[in-house]
Length: 582
Image (cartoon, rainbow, N blue to C red; front, side, top):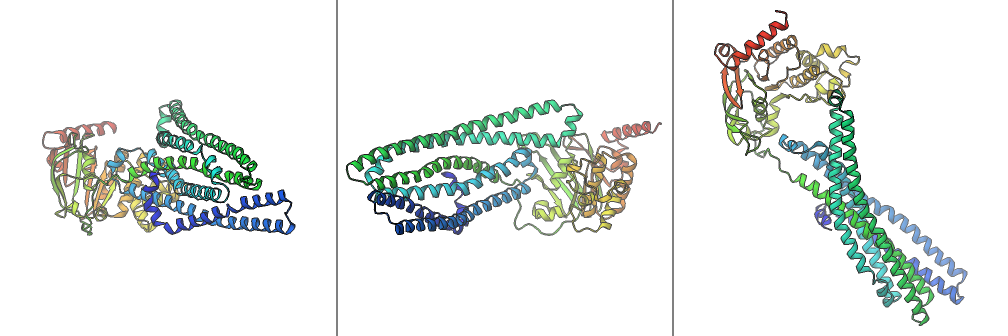
């Protein structure tokens, strides 16, 4: 029952609703004690030949009134208890979503999306059942079972009650054993479901790659194996679950046998009347539900405990980016200074960046070039505080970026990542994502600056064209330019283009660069690229290799000194000349 203790914080929050539901349940349980008594009295009156029409009508009227009262009470306790459990699921779902949005990329590097989705769906359903069905089953079984036993013990025969309960310790031991087994197997079943969920999400997202490589059959086979594994583990859960009811029915059957056998003996001895034995067996019938409920309770509780443990573990993961509550709420401008000794994603791993020192004045453009994996994207993410710098400082306006509130820091930066994520919405909504109240004129101007307007107007629905999930209906270059338009619309103090011109042709790239020069006057721009033509206009260019700056200066300076930049520039110039037929 540990899960109920873990959920005590919520029960305290909603104590009025739960208490009302429990009180209504108690009244219903009390009302259920009356019909067996009336049945017993009726049998005794029939046996003695003293049952009158008036008495029969009275008994029937009492039963009808009780039935109506219980009908109304059962409706309201369901509203109270099930309504509260639904609110718990809503609360936890919102907490999870809020937690996910506050987590840094480091969190998602260690976890699969499908697994997180399983936490947000299957696990929350199990927890909701625990707070609803679980509480109902626990309270109802204790109240009804307790009241029924007290009634049997106090009003009929304490000896017959004790005799009929002799098989109960065996049931308690077996259900506890089944519950422990169920917890282990359900945890494994949930993990299997998470893996299958992750596979579905990954396959649908990458369906074009799967088809391009002709891996449809292999992908389907892999899914089938995962699906079979889910079935196998859920069958194990079902087998354990299936043990509860037969065990309980056998125990109940033994109790009935003992009660009828010894009840008949007590009738012969004159200790009990036939009506009392009938009432006793009717009460024993009322105990079937609490016994079944007790077995069902173990099922619900163990599922809920496994799921709550998984969700709690997720919510306990600390945010790797800690924000000072007293952080500066002002939006910084564009002067940047790096004094970074070294940085690595894993403290035990080799440094990703090392000895990164440079300064960029406000309104200037910085170009960052280097081989793939040289640390260009990492440098940009550190400026966004997606990862913490422990050895060194990064300054904006001569203030450590850690002193700024995260919202204020990111309010100063427009970012176009390498992975051009578009939402399943219209082109207009995607461009206006960061500024939902932007006018169509502003959106159109940003699209023109990103050289995507001409493409958009060619579509049948223009700016109202639905792009599909992750922009599936668009080319790579179109997605890149819509992402650029989205960032340009914000008109931030600092704009970061992380290899954001790689999917466009040279002429389109030239147009975008010229538009950036015009639109970004007086504001800071950072461009990472592989093509040097994207950054040859920059006021400062740094060349990275294995996380270190190996060259730094202007374009004119760097092409006049031997090194990586000059060699790459000459090679790319030759490639361009050849591609043009030279």
